[in-house]
Length: 371
Image 1: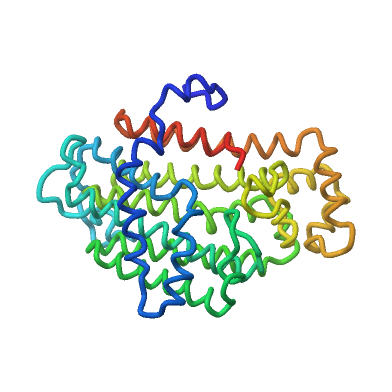
Image 2: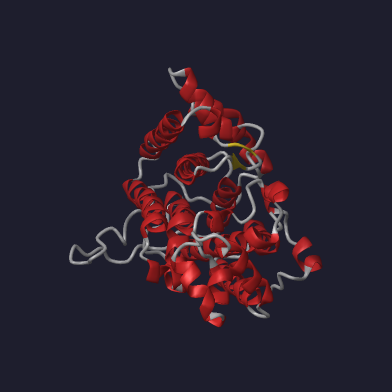
């Protein structure tokens, strides 16, 4: 049993970012080429996120580590394929491999190259969604730097996001795996659904924890979990295989844990550390796990949540109620821990490997981070 709070135990596991640092370097080197355009203004706007303020490349790191973990898993025999199945390609979907992939021959193989390309695609989709989000939210900063639309204009920012999605689609097609294209297209659909849900939810839904978690899945977890399953398919595993399912379940729970922790930090973090304004969600009229738990205890908070904190003094009253609650923040932290535990359970269904241990440590980083 892993104890996330045990710093000593976690530090004995492989450091996730260092383990794939060398393999991710080509990503940083080639991204300028991938997002280059005949239109200089588009290239500049698109490159803005991929230079200097790119953080730790969280999503490409997950894909690279998952690719290594999957290489330690032998490809299972596909179950009988049935045209009557409601999931016609459940028994298919895995890329056809010319030779079996192992931990020893994985690096620099064609499988490895395609999985690395998937990591680039996932980051491009993520960045495009951030650029579009900032336009919708009228955010002035992102990752500690000026938002694209503040540097250029809303029109250029929207086009830069569109351009990144178009480039990601071209690269996705080059993976030559129709199941992966379908899965990642569904991830794109989920991102849009999450944004619409955030903008248009009726007042009653704003109080529902289930609605909050569904939106968190659409906006954050969907891209991670679909990327994890796609990594398994590119490694030769069929869509319905135990390995691909374990990968997706890991991504699902890790993504939710990440978003819940993000929402906790929105109240406990400092703007200079987070790289975005503190209380950003409340400024947008959004209620996340800590406030929802506080509203369950304090009925007077509910009208404030339902009107998206639009009246003067609403945000201050909500904050006072949250920090006066003895349990709201603890419940939110427990929810993040629940999903991180579930992520580990899914990981442990994969064979033991250095990459799997690094993913355990990464899960710990997700719920103990301060930014």
